[in-house]
Amino acid sequence: MAIKGLGGFHLACDAENDQAVTELRKRKRRPGKPLAIMIHDIDEIKRHCFVSPEEERVLKSPQRPVVLLLKKPESMISSEVTPNNRYLGVMLPYTPLHYILLRESKMALVMTSGNMSEEPIAMENEEALQRLGHIADYFLMHNREIYSRYDDSVVRLIGKEMAQIRRARSFAPFPIRLPFEAQEILAVGPELKNTFCLTKGIYAFVSQHIGDMENLETLEHFETTLGLYKKLFRIEPKIVAHDLHPEYLSTKFAKSLDNIPLIGIQHHHAHIASCTAENDVEGRVIGLSYDGTGYGSDDTIWGGEILIADWMDFRRAAHLRYFPMPGGEAAIKRPYRMAFSYLYSLFGGDHERLKIDFVRSLKEDEVNIMRNQLDKNLNSPITSSCGRLFDAVSALLGVRDVIDYEGQAAVELEMIADEGVEESYPFKIQGTGFRVQGTGRLSPEVPNAQSCLVINTEPIIREVVEDLEKGTSPSVISAKFHNSVVDFSAEICERLGGKRDSTGWP
Image (cartoon, one colour):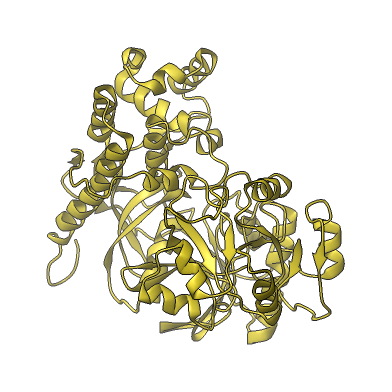
């Protein structure tokens, strides 16, 4: 059933019915990504999930976000709701219609956004009938107009602090207070999980979750919402900031604007600057920015970066060792390609002698293609990405060879980790320090050329392979790998922190 909500339509079905959830996934073309559920009261949620006092407070808050909760083994919620995941995304009703529906049905309902995968949420009645007619068997509509599309916000508790995973309904467009005064600026945001930001005075107005900027529908949603924000907050940007990646739709949008200064911002510097601004931290910091991919100021693909940064500038102090991505974008969607890249880079032709299931599972034709790509450097860009390292380990362990959604290999690798394991794998930190040549400022014309520390993950991969050959449990290997990431992150921060004196970093 398609149900009209506060910021758009939901697609709903019985969350305890495997067949219904599977059919919804098939029709929505969302094979693996977790689905949110709505349950009518907190006592019923506690039947299915472990709920701490802090999590209960957030669930009951006026914002009513989706909260990630650890699922109880005895829960009857279908495993198809969150495949290969120990958590459920749960929310309480937040409109009168939801209260009536949940109270009368006494069902736990899947409540996922009313759209085809990667498209904007359907908002108007006629639009929903057209776009969701092949998905929903029934429609529950009303005549209350929706002014702007808003997905549900998603949060989780880390310790006792709430961390926002998706900032949308009830949180946006409430502004973030900046620790400095800003001009009227538009930042158009990245390609994946896009949000844009408008600043005025001491406030930053961050948009709701727009989505992945990979199709015309999402771009139109971006432009419509931007127009609404500009009107609502009376902002006419004097400067536009964009990612350095030239092929992002958001970057192309920025470059299509006339008579306005443009500033290119390095992807990972933006991550760190946003954290310091949000937490009111001034001055230069050691910032760790681990993600899938981001365009580096040296024209390579970054993603495992340790930067000395403030709001204005940064120095690349350390990064993960570069490894090639055979097939480029194909390696992102097929983690086994990254696993092969690591093995071939470290063992060469001897990788065929490794006594692990991963090697035996590879198809000879594709191995020959990947080997040729790596040997001849054909469509195999190098990357320092931490996300691609997680992908490689996930594939080596047989957790996830091909992904259905971004980050799936890393999520499922985390889910199997044995939390009682304290051991970790060795690693190497190579180099003696870092220096910046030139200004270090970011723009496509002035690359951030520098010599810096390199975290060599080769020993980690070698020992993962050794453990696999010895028959060590994947849950133990996953835990040791996660502990290793913590260890090298802590050590690199200690090293860099020791270089700081009363005047700052060199």
